[in-house]
Length: 132
Image (cartoon, rainbow, N blue to C red):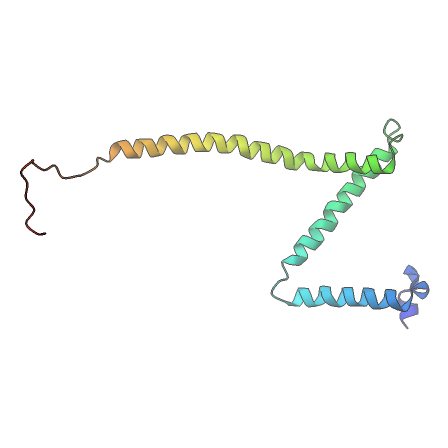
């Protein structure tokens, strides 16, 4: 029955170890989905989506005549570099924005500190407290 259901992926050529391995993997993913740690699946699927994006960029680079001379390894490196450009621009934007925010926050704190006068008692030189 399994050979009929999964015949489109060639499961008849898989060994018993491969079937056991993939079955164990599927069981662990189902167990993780039912546990309280199911948020880890988001990292798993996010990583797969990221790698599919890198694969798409790499295949677009391979189809370009000028960049088709690169080896497969070099085209993957270029694709990963291109995929990191949005992250780098976001980090740069946040860093520059944080600098502006930190200056404005510092100015607001200085204004608030100037408004509040410290209330410390001023004593004469011959002051004697009543309680020791």
